[in-house]
Length: 404
Image (cartoon, rainbow, N blue to C red):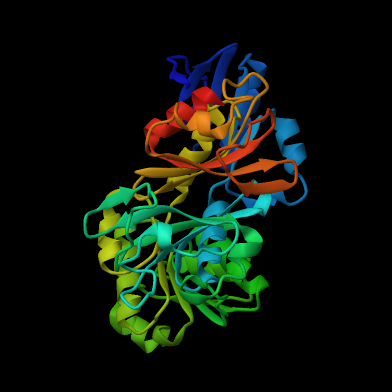
């Protein structure tokens, strides 16, 4: 893992610097894209081994992504706003899910959903469930106990449990029955706050023929939004004003997403949108301490760009062994995609033998070898180049990083 260094670039900014083998890595994560890119160019010319830049403006990714990296000597670009917008859009498009994320280049999908009292799976042990094909219940979150369970066959599902399903994409998209998550049409969408996430989410919704409204209380923001998104209806108003939401008919919208820059505003706006009658409401959240509040309000949420940036940095810090990572339940659990190196300690080891070296709260769910993706089985012998998808806590992640 990287260690903090005391050296500073001769520029004004807010970049933590890290030491790694063979040199120094610059992490440029200020709020100004141009500042981050220039900082990376300076760092490379000063002899820094690696540069990482946070870039928000999507125009850098349209035609000149490679040129941007080449011209400014950027080794890795972190773009979190687009990631958050895509995650939020995927949740909106699935009925009943509170988190959706793809792994293995889209071959595997993770999805979380809550079990209701009437679900026929409740009060049953996992070993008695008949799951479709390549599908696993990989995690259980029990809100009544605020506890994350790494399940075994003898664990019983209870009403209110939030389960994390991991399965091959073709299985996930055709699920039926209580676990069926049928696509939900989005004809009208309301977004609170004119943030970068809201702008990118609006573009995704427009591409799927939705009518989009953005609410922002600041006149200058509204003018900018109207210029950037001429197809969007922009309302100047307070998304935390219940009477305003009712007057604008927010309760008749298919979806509402609170995308303000402050958690408190997002929590209040999403709660008031539900009060105004909107059935499908989401919120962006940057401080995990508020997660329990949103769960009590039954409002699904997406971790903000700050958390996504932290996950991307963690993946880079693991020297590219981790290719994707997502945090669940205030970082009590993680789902990671990790590729096995040529000299990995686990290379040539059967999965059943590897499990003996891993802590209890660590489940290897899927193995990808070339184009083949399958549920991890005990007899599977791990080979260099294999990618695995695992669920673990921080201790499990540490062990996996050492073995792979």
